[in-house]
Length: 145
View 1 (cartoon, helix red, strand yellow):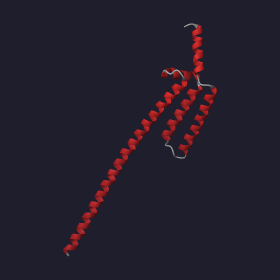
View 2: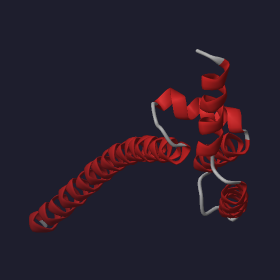
View 3: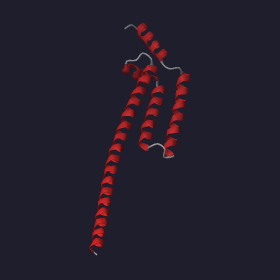
């Protein structure tokens, strides 16, 4: 490829990057989300494990947005033409992975709850059986008198 073609290619790639204003606004939103997640974790409204995942995703996105070479690399890696398309695809992948993770955690909790409820039902059935047996024994003692 000639130097002119390579230069035009680099100019086209540079023009495809996000404008500085968009990067600043997105990084500001990222900082707000970061503070929100940390506040939720601090007040115990968000599990620490989920908080770590969200903090890593927010910081990764902010770094990707702020480093143009990294943004171009991600754009080429996913086969997108525009960086916004690549970021949208990565966001969709993150949402699907989080949904899968949360549903697996929900399944684990559901299975544990099923076991606890079954054990409680067995214990109550044993107590009821023991109470009925003592009540029938007491009624036999009274009838024998």
